[in-house]
Image (cartoon, rainbow, N blue to C red; front, side, top):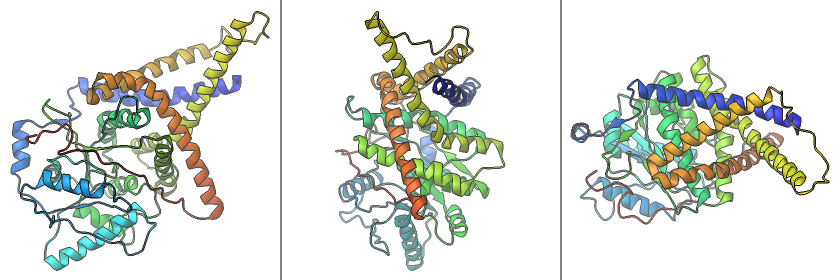
Length: 441
C-alpha cells in the first residue's frame, strides 16, 4: 500500500498540474478581457439572420434509431422551416450499400455519396455539410450559425450540452458536469492554444473544401470506418492540412439556456454509460494514438497528451480510492478495538509526501470548484452542488469503461481484428420545441 500511495500521489500531482494549467489559462484570459463566447445581441443576430443562405446538407446516421429518428426530424424541421410540408420534402432516405451491422462512419460515407449523386442530378452544390445524431435536439438558429461562420472556417463545432434528468439520476447527469466544463472552458483553451478543434460527432459543419480534403486523405472516404471515434480524428487531419477550425460558443440573452448548442439525453444506466465511454476511450486513446501519433508542435502534442491521459488517470483514480478505503478501514479497526494490531504509519511525520498530499488536496479542491461553477452556470446551482458527489460516480464509470476498453483492445490485438463498434441506444425528449429556447430566440 505504501508503494502504491507514493506512486499514486505523484501521478495525481502531474495530472492535477496539467488541469490547473488549463484552468489558469482560461481565467487569466478572462481577466485580460478575452471573452470565451460571442454574445448574440440584436445586432449580431440580425447580421446572422440577414446573410444570404448557402445550401446546407445535414446528415443523420440512423442505423437502428427507429425509436427517435421521426421525432428528431419532425422537431428540427418545424423549428427551421415555417412552411414545411407534411411529407418533409427536404428529407431524403439513404440506405447503406451493405446490410448491418454497420458503423456511424459507414453510414455517413454512404450519405455523402448520395449527396454527391443528388447534386449531380439536381444541378446544385451544397456549400456546407453538417451532421447530427438521431437523438439530437437542434437549436432553431443552428443553420444560420453554420451559414455565418462557413466558409470563413472549414470546420465549425457547436457545443454539446446534455439534457438534465431528475436530480437522482446520477449516471445520466454526470455527463452534464463533464460536457459543461469541457465545452465552456477546455475547448476554448484548446482553440486559443492550437487552433485545433475535434468534431464532437454532432453539431459539426464542414465546408466543401474540408470534405474534399478528407476524401483525398482517405481514399475517397471522408470517414474512417476502422475508427470507433471517426469524428475525433477529422479535426486533427484538417488542422494538419492548414484548414481553419472554430468552436462557436454563442451566448444567448438570459431568457433560457445560455448558449446555442446541441442538446440530447445521455445514457442513464451503468452498462450503457460504460459501453459508450469505452468506445470513446478505444477510439481517442488507443486508435488515436496509433493513427495520429504525436505532433512536432509542442502545444498540439500537449493537447494530444491531455486527450490520452485517461490511460493513466483512470487506474490512478481507482488506486486512490483503494488507498483511501484502506486507510479508513485501518483507522476504524484501531479506533474500535484497543487491543487491535497496531499498523505502522503509512506516512512518517517528517516525510516530503505530506507536502505532496497538501498540494494534491489543493488540486482536488480546484477541480471541485471548477466543476461546481460550470455546471451551476449551465444548469443552476442545485445541479452545481450535486456535481460534487457526481465526480465520484464519474470516476467509477470512467475506470469501468477504461478496463472494458483495455479488454477490447487486447482481444482485438490477439485476434487481429478491429474493435467492434458498439451501438448506443438513445432516447428523444417529449418536446414541442427545443428546451430552453423560446420561439423568438
